[in-house]
Image (cartoon, rainbow, N blue to C red; front, side, top):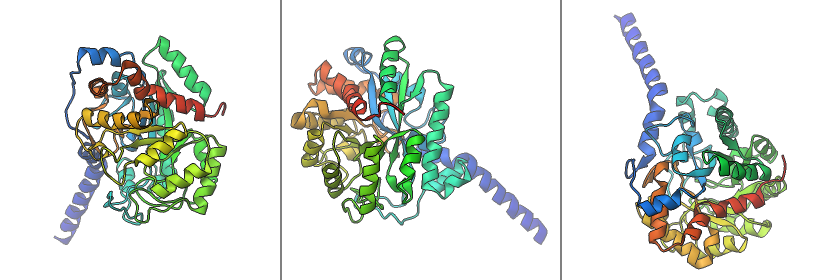
Length: 390
């Protein structure tokens, strides 16, 4: 009987492991990456006609975190390359997430809380080295995108200004051509080593944010516990990013960190995905002072789609936030930063982006304004920031 009991226990354990490796990641994906309205969507004819002329550039997407093949159309989550193309996206920034502490909160996230990414990495059968290393998680996600681009003749990894210009020329003949740019969300991925910036640049990363959900060795996060400024290590990293022509992303940065980075650097920066406190008062969102500071540096502010960014559940709330930025500092500083697949609920999946174009029309933006907001502004800044050559 004891032997039988052990066999049964072993069998149940095996079934549990199989269930974990087969089902845990898809369940988490479906639970956390939801839409408030399921496709298909029905924008007005006017909005769809305008949207069809746009090249949408989205500054933030977390698709690489999830176990979906980027090139296959899926019925869960917010995006994949087919849905992005259907939504008119011609340039997508794909961000690598490497640490998500349990119990994360806008009122303060503890960097030492249990990290949930190792469990997701194991469930999705990422290489074992990624289970214990944030740096290796970033490298793995870059490899995932490079392999996708190698299998899709119309998906191009953007490394240089020439790559971007080639993409724009290609799209005039083939609108399905799509550029992909790699970003790191939080440089705790460096694991304390400035030299790892060079490795990540060699892997294809061209945009990096200093912090994500929590304070780290570089400085404070907007939702961290201390919210401090740039540390000595952070200053060394910022200098290295500038030397390697990496676009600095100030999303998730504390107010003190934003001030310190702007004081230490020149040229445009981006805030890839955010809201603004004037329309949605949250520590995660930008104050008008920082909206003005980013604009003064010729940067762009990517407004997100999720509820706590814009204090609303539909595209009208996104358009309202964009209107505030445009009225405050000019439409040339407004961009799109959806946060698709970032464990948030959004109004629509990527195929519903024409609904945002419709909301912008309803908000009173002109067709030319919408062209800038939905893509041209982001392209302008990336052209300035990307290196001229490898």
